[in-house]
Image (tube, rainbow, N blue to C red; front, side, top):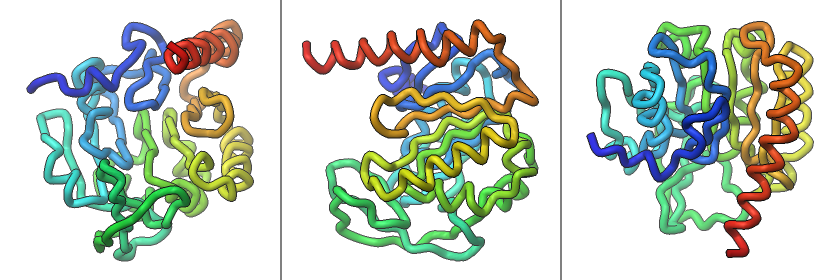
Length: 241
């Protein structure tokens, strides 16, 4: 398979790769790891992790357009579902912005041209469906539904996850900010280290379960300050050159 995902991948040789604008902690990942890719789009994230680390990846995508274009492999499996706060069908709003995405919520700043009904599932229900209550990495990019996803997941379910890499959507709707901060405080209170890699909003947030993976204090300092600062400077330089 052509490695179409490479243009979406940065820093693969480091402990903190960034794929599809999602940063994650690489040392725990092996060919025995299970990755959940929520909001998979074309599954570039999953194919990158399958190819680089040998992970078994489960891709959840809500739109028919994208799900039809996801190529499965022996390490990548797809599911036409929407993660939500209940196990009921949901209506997905489809964008007409020149890219193919869908959201349960009509986010600010996006034009929507159509709708689609799809099966909705809670996060816990999906983990039960695939028979994995302790995934090693969960990538969350579900267009605002992440608030409901976390709010309807128990502490026990969340603590089973090795790490999350989350795109929150306050850059599209500032009203999400209070809920995002509440969720961040909740995860920190149950043992997760929280790292924010975007400057103004919360578009790239990594939560590492310290009960499963414990970076050293020096490594934590480097992640929180040195890596974040150096990558932020590179993004600024790219924008002005």
